[in-house]
Length: 105
Image 1 (cartoon, rainbow, N blue to C red):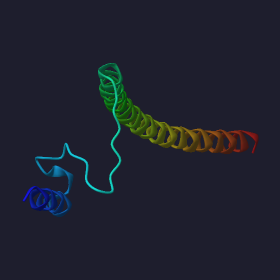
Image 2: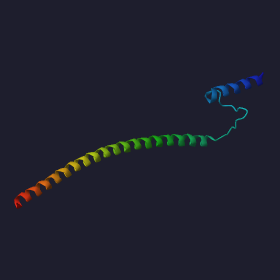
Image 3: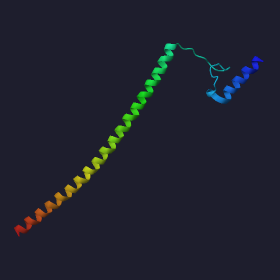
């Protein structure tokens, strides 16, 4: 009778995966590991710290990407302004040359 319940429990675990409510037993082919409470606390702490650091890194990444996008837009605007100033300067130089040629004639 007891053997039947163990088999049913193992089968239920295999069918439902590790979301099964009674996942605190050792199935036939599984390995169990014991850790101390301190080791467990250290694991939980390192996992929580790592999650916080990952969230912070993602936040920093998004802020840098936003800053990068803004700088690219500013760069494009400055290039357009430089191009316009260059055209005006070239036309000014051409006008000066034409005026000088007219004065020499």
